[in-house]
Image 1 (cartoon, rainbow, N blue to C red):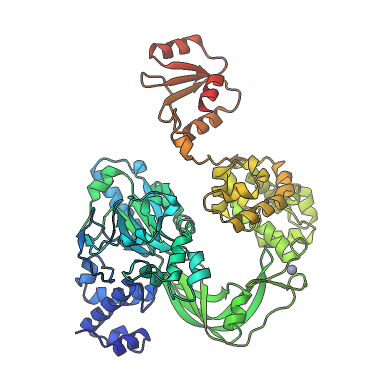
Image 2 (image 1 turned 90 degrees about the horizontal axis):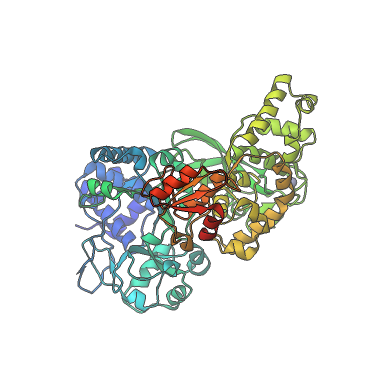
Length: 632
Ligand SMILES: [Zn+2]
């Protein structure tokens, strides 16, 4: 028997706890919640569903159909169900690195079974869209239905819905989604969640004006999974950079995303692992596990960041969350303090996922607030910039100057002597810029009061930090330009080499995939601001590993793509650079001549017998100049 809606309400309000529910009632509630979610009108949050109700049900009724079958959409259509061109399965889920690690162990085992080397296992990560799943065979669009049979909802395309990236129809599975920024600016007053709106796009009755407009604005879209930005890498990189990969992937699209999908790309391994009734074993979705608590605020103090942003820091009644005692948390900005009443004595909802720093989600009980008028570091009168309270005294404000210097060494991440204590001491002795610090000698440091050993150590660390190889995007990010974090810097340097970025204009930067115009504008301004310091620091000859430029379509179809080439002899430039460039257009650089080699590219001082033996194999010999002309 279905639950009464009054009972459902009491469960939602947590007046009835899961412990008090019978197995059947709990199952009914989960099904009701799932159905409501699928139909675009959720009654509880995803978190509550995933972490409170579903685990409780799993413990009691592990064989419940909710764990066995593909979740239906809930939305009912009058059309008869039709067989999908390909079955659409759900995705298995993991909520911790530990579970991902276990999945990797299963990959490794299957790889061993088919003799695939560990280093050859390739993994792809894509954002997991939180939209409405569909399958587009080029003529019709189907809902996922039960995974085998779905409903024909081709009318959405007839209503003008476009495919993401202006790409073509017929790219298979994907999701109907709405852009996050658009939802916030155009739809959030009318719809509680993007999901409610997404569901309204496919319903049978005629679209309302908002939905038509969103389609016309290309804010509502069908996104085929194969159009999603991807991360590709091996198991080792995934293991060592898991958190960064997840954070980066989550930030790649302007859609609601509720996790990251990891999957194997090796065909043989996919075949070997196969699928069960519900999901493919070679694929898993990572969703962040969040712990929540209600916490009392003891006081709120302003803190000045390196960009001049004043952050409210709440001192909290010590609270255990995800295995750590939390005594402090930062509010997002003073807008939240003002709007929600974050002050001494207020009660907040605090969340923490994994080992990440805790976050104030919302203020549950407001209190009187204290908005600072002057910068606690330099005394400058503070200014509001939308929700943010700012100290605009950027070049003088001690907190900002110290923050920027500390940030540089933190991002460089190849030294441990330049923590906040050292930086503060250097500041006391007149250091205001990184380039000044790199100019210091042991004597200079001793004169500032650093011990003899420490001074030597610090100078050695400075030397090492410039001689040790670091990625160029890391070096660039260390300058701390707003909107130029590690991810954006890497993205930028995939499109333009480091020595070209200072000459870029707004149009060129905003043409790079992933950069909004506002971001591009801030990057242009930021780059010109750091230019003098960048040039000064460059004198210390940092050992930069240059990012290889991304293949664009023209390069992918380069006529030399797939050819096997050998470079030999002294080239006019760096041979390593030549190899890198060749690889970037799809050329296979090999090291010994065989009948399979296509070209031998020769520089100066190449022995005649080397050339002769290549010719014997039928290999074409090219001078450096001819080769360069060919790849133009
Ligand atoms: Zn200040």
